[in-house]
Image (tube, rainbow over all chains, first blue to last red; front, side):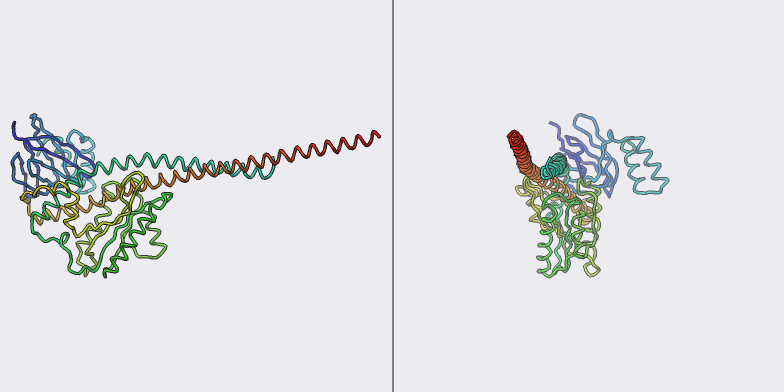
Length: 125
Length: 306
């Protein structure tokens, strides 16, 4: 059996995704980090950004997280975020509209959130 | 129809209308309890993971952080009281207020100054009527709180804790809310959120007990992680308290409305009996009047025959 790690992606008000994975890539405050099975126990602060999860069946799940934490121990990885959305759930047009609106209103936080959403969908990291 | 009977009929009608309203409120509350319970359950994974992470940092590092270390002689404590926006929920709000009063007394006896933060219109009006100072109050979301609401409430609290005590900050943070035990039982409870007591967090994460926590690698640093983690921890605790309070509120309202409906039914029953008696009395009187009239008439005709 190939080594795998159990991933729980939870937002404040719901569990977004959970399953087995071989690699998780997330962006912490000190740079991108890739976690594979057997990694040293880790607790990090996440930046707003896309998180990529390579599942055991070869697929990959991309989610946009807006701040939060990554915690890994005993081949169990949890991604905690106040707001987390899977790429499939994100409405591209709505995110684009939100980005335009945020740009015109010079709302930096909203602009960042919208940009993160779009990056997660388009896969540009 | 007699005057008495008419009065009874009118009262029966008004009580029936009230009963319909209370019955409807009971059913609405019952359906909302389920929704509120689901929300509590949905927020549990985040809360438990966060608690696990906080426990890991607090035990796995010897970092001193204002949010985890106890002040040597605490002078000020903040109390967050969660009540409801609307009434008609039995003793729900007043029980929570009483629990907060008791806590305030205890803290004062320990020589701490107590500052109040309030959620819910009932609590706000209670304090306003007694002219007690309130630092901050929030209303309008006790029915179904969202995470954004919890954030709004938690932010000033975290700020107050981080502020130096000499400059008006607080040393301790307590929260009073109504814990949802079951449909029939809801208890007002008071919990100390900050400074973090490790026994309490370990108790909550049962998994932490039976195994030694691994040595964590902190990214970027233990202090940095704590800085980011503890506000989230407070937020998630406040969110959980708000959700439980909402579920309790609906359960309390359902129970109150159920007994109101039962009472209305009882009242209608006794009023109906009185109305029937009054109707019977009317009929009896009418008969005796007719009989009396007929015999008087008969007497009169008999007299004229002679």
